[in-house]
Image (tube, rainbow, N blue to C red):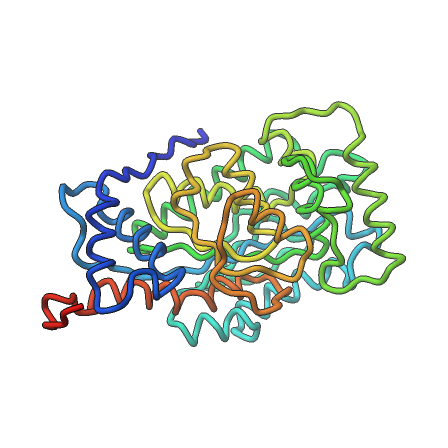
Length: 350
């Protein structure tokens, strides 16, 4: 059963938390985006208290990278074939990808979820979680990417893996993805879930040429005009989504339900965030937007959710790399809230 009951963040203590932040030994607002970030985190961790938390605790970050293949890849809309998804999942498990490096550097527990890659790995690993919905989706330019039952099961799988990590102590969730051609899926989802044109939603992904871009654009337009056109969010996920994307949505919903902050990576994860937002608008209170990617639709998505990303590094890799790189800033926001002296305690008079 899909549970999308997410508690609205109780902001009754906002003024009290803001006083704590404003009384630190600095001009008000001088720490920029770190100040509203500290406010958000303090409110999340003060939900069941009558006074603001005096210390924000984020000691167990977990990165979940969801991987899945896409039938539309056979149409040549990416620079690489679907086989690369399986190869990259193996690379994740062996610790050789960029996301592994950044998780290691920032002491983030890492897991990859096989949500439905085309070629299943025939070995097990403590870093690999198998929640397969199939051997990749159908080509959504011709058929629905998945059945409604698969989409619903994907949401449940995402909720399950997140719940399991929370039981093991996770207190902040970072999300990433891997899937050849998943920018095509994400672009179609963005167009279906928003008022933006297809041209505004579709980018060049990891670097396709002009001919491939024109073909990608035409296929997505074709998919969006295919009948019937269901308008509810879960049906739209079934129509255009990836197995990894739908499970990311489920993961977000569960983290929000349990009031765990969620670090949003680049374009694909932000599209999943838009879908989760459509299902449960109150989840926005738990999102931390890591960065602004090079994908052209990403800036519009961030605007759609009034998001202010922490970083702008020209990233376009995915894998959760932006989320992992943003974690030190999130920890810095906690640190200044927890440890920075107040004017009174430091004896500073202004």
